[in-house]
Image 1 (cartoon, one colour):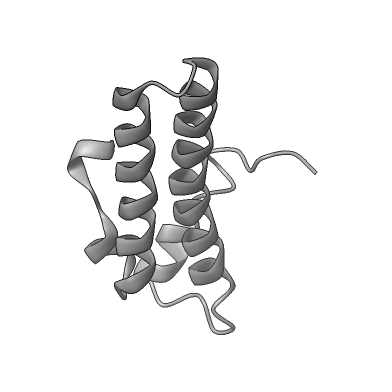
Image 2 (cartoon, rainbow, N blue to C red):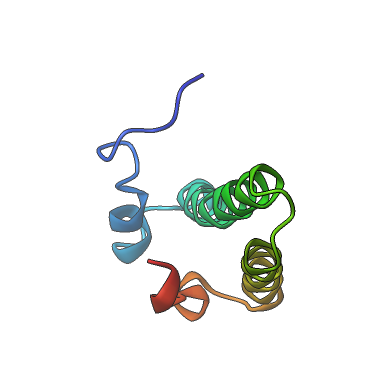
Length: 86
């Protein structure tokens, strides 16, 4: 199964208009948001390993892991926005 298209990710509209009685749109939005964080962690991990374990890349990897943990610790999607990660 491929990634959802932008059209398929219009679950936010469902949430805004109260058209999500079984919370499927909420789950989709949450998983999509978490996946973006995890993709950043993966990318930072690959750069760190490829760089020969450079100190700068290690620091970047630690920052992305910490950002993911902060996002998981918070509650709602709106609270999870990290402008510097956009």
